[in-house]
Amino acid sequence: MKVVVDLNLCQGYGQCCYEAPDAFKLKGTEILVYDYAPPKRLQGAIMRAAQACPVRAITVEIDERQEGEND
Image 1: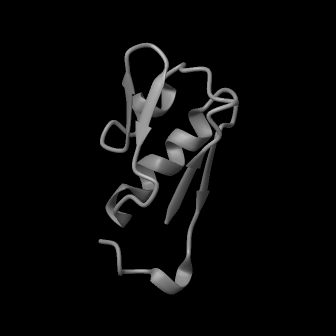
Image 2: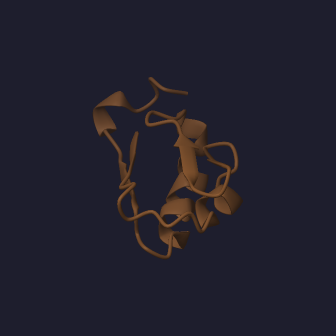
Image 3: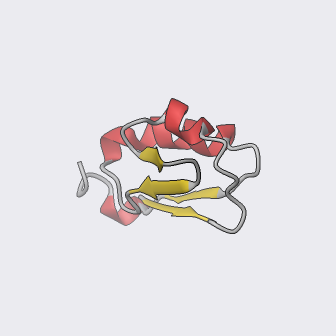
């Protein structure tokens, strides 16, 4: 799984932090910190976070070939 956040779109609303607190964190009011290659166990929360983003700044790519490698 690969997570990409378009930081030009991100407005710091923090909805991703509520949906996936183990994957996304806000530092201050505007700096989003996240793991671009999170463990598979966070996939559901990250997918919910992407859907919750009001500006659709989060893209999640799932590589089926690596299924199970990043647990």
